[in-house]
Amino acid sequence: MPIAIRTYIDTDESAVVSLWQRCGLTRPWNNPGKDIRRKLAEQPELFGVMADDSEVIGTVMAGYEGHRGWINYLAVDPDRRQQGLGRQLMEWAEARLRERGCPKINLQVRQGNEAVLAFYSALGYADDRVVSLGKRFEHDDR
Image (cartoon, rainbow, N blue to C red; front, side, top):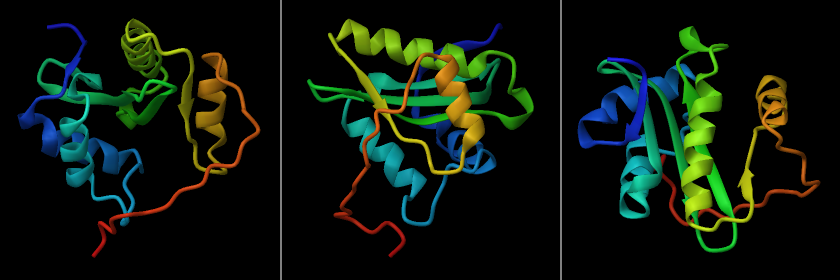
């Protein structure tokens, strides 16, 4: 079976969390299992999983609240990078957001992650010159 992007299914959880850990996306204050359950409660059809046969090799979480689209947890297996897989995942997410009438996508990149900034720049994303703020309602690490 060729590489395909499909929506997340329950049996993907351990492979998805493992991928996120290998990609350095997990943080103690964001429990990945809780993040998955939260996404499944809101627009689960925008949670894409890229698989090569039965092996999970990529993910993307998209969301749209009527004003802006958002991208989270874009991940490609470190051994499979530089093959255009991240671009395919972004195209999948962008297409689904456009179908919903989304006029603009926002995403966040951790400071100092120059390789990821270059990736998004090559896809047409630009620095909006804004400061990202956050307020935590739940503390997953407790």
